[in-house]
View: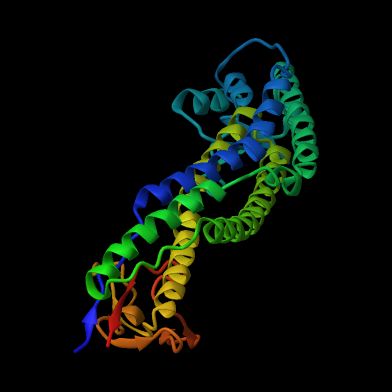
Length: 317
């Protein structure tokens, strides 16, 4: 008679800890050098008299580029432009302005702001182009975290299996250290690719924003907001890689014991993709994974497909 083993679930705290480490690495390696550059270049604007338009230009709320003023307008700013003879254009969500028709004070403010923006952009691009992720990631270490995960899996696997067949399948310390090192190096490759993609996005943000009249404070907020998104991506990356890591490790341990089959079990919520839902409660072999994506024909065991939260429930014949 077949028996099912209790599935071993990795505590979410490990995902959160590794995600925190990844995000901290990105902040230190990518964001902080740029924030330091913003701080160094602060105060480049022309010290002109303050009115609503001037204040908005200097704060980065609005910007001038190629005859158009765009940004975030309030009633006071619109009224001042109206007094100067310019009407808000709904089609471009801004004002068409001949800079030579503006008061000298505003011309100087715009000129100084654009100069400051381009100078900052040039400096930021230079900083971005010299970010050396390969060098920084050498000292990035997740090996201790992976070792803790292996310890947790081994403890729970031993409990689960010993209750059914009475065997101790604990991995030796040397084996765990080797496995943890291998997966740490694998994670470093993913983080390096992830960081390099972030560098591309940062470069695009600087080129599109700073060179088109957006001021320093506004650009800084845009970059910082982008890193808030990176925090979510860090958690997703941690979930994905730990899911793969634990799935392949558990599969190897089951095969050591001659356990070759499992029952597919979904997370039973609305986020389960249709192709995976069709596999729920069906029996498969570890060596012959089912199709998890009917469109591409991709095959995988639970937790080995991109973003998969399903689990394999081992079966002992």
